[in-house]
Image (cartoon, rainbow, N blue to C red; front, top):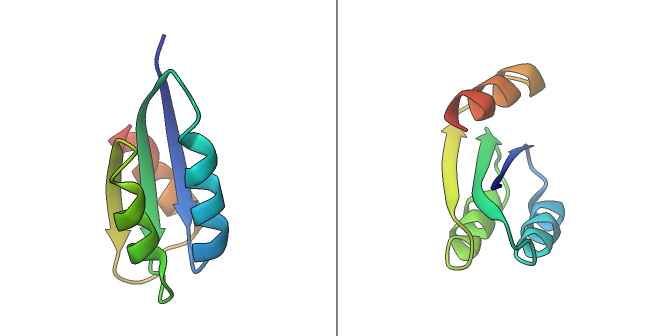
Length: 78
């Protein structure tokens, strides 16, 4: 059985870095969908770094659309 994880984020680069590092230790992880909901911090860089060790699908909203929209977009992608 494989595991898919959807993460929505908005200007939480340090927390996202910790979350992605934690997921690196999961053995049955098949995909990580990260929805960047209009972040203006280092979120894009954190995602780029994590792509080296995780199977990431990146979604980006140019401007914040809110938690529900980000969650729905992530669920559709997964």
